Length: 147
Image (cartoon, rainbow, N blue to C red; front, side):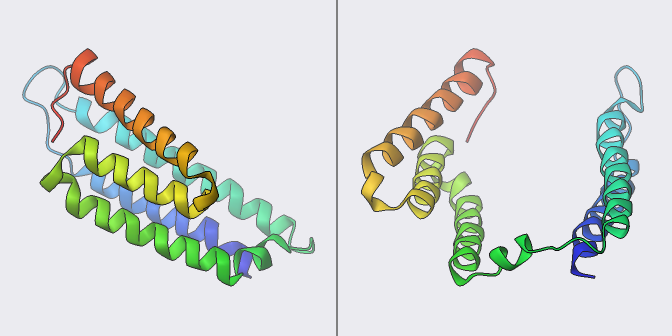
């Protein structure tokens, strides 16, 4: 029964996203419905894929599901909780201190959580280089305004 939780949650998210996509405002320029096309496509794909996933889980219900037990270890649950906390902190500080610094801090925190402190130089280099490349790509090359 636990195996059916993921496809059911994905289906609910897909239906919710579809309903919210249908309520998007119409465009005043060009095709009035154009802002809705891509979100509706994504929602529809999520719904279809979750139905396929649900059917596969029903069909394979006699197969052992040992992977879920590995998911419930204290270390994994701690990492998931800390990652959610880091995401929350990232969303709070993003507007206040800007894209570049907040992204470096967020990526460094997640890298240290996953890789540990023994790889501190690699963690910092990846966080700084990725954030710098992302900032340069969006702010300079694509001329997208970032906070």
